[in-house]
Amino acid sequence: MGGCVTSFTGAHRFLSNFWPAAVSLDHIIYPTVEHAYQAAKSVEPAKRAIVRMMPNPAMARTAGRRLGVRRDWVAVKVEVMRHLLEQKFAAGSHLADALDATGEMLLEEGNTWGDRFWGVYGGTGANTLGRMLMAIRTKNRDCEFAALLG
Ligand SMILES: Nc1nc(O)c(N)c(N[C@@H]2O[C@H](COP(=O)(O)O)[C@@H](O)[C@H]2O)n1
Image 1 (cartoon, rainbow, N blue to C red):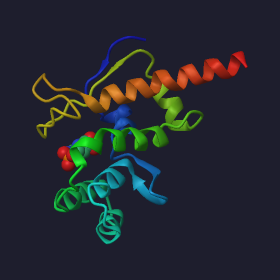
Image 2: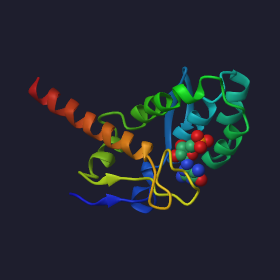
Image 3: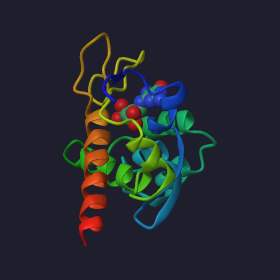
Image 4: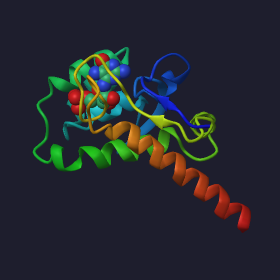
């Protein structure tokens, strides 16, 4: 199955970081990747707790953006995101199955909020989130193949 997912909406909403999925950050569980990613901007447990308690991911994002980021944030944020997404789409989970069902489709978080780092806005962007999801999709398949071979 080729083609392209150009926004994480509708049937592909589960690809968004706003989708409910319990993930762990430093042994604390967060309700969505967005909650955990935004909390990770700070190393202070009290600030992380404020983000974790937000009732929805949009509010977690707003709260996270007000934290003031840790000094190494730019250096670590991609690895933080990868760590969280690997949990969300852990091989064998129903979300991993849904990701696998996207076949060979190009995954792009086309967006209206101007994000050209994680997604694509106005036809351009690094699409870092989409590329990570496609890499996890491939990795999960490789693991499954390796397990079949024993
Ligand atoms: N679904 C969704 N709705 C929005 O309104 C968004 N802004 C996003 N983007 C997500 O925000 C995170 C990046 O936040 P920072 O710019 O680093 O503060 C990342 O998870 C994007 O996917 N998504």
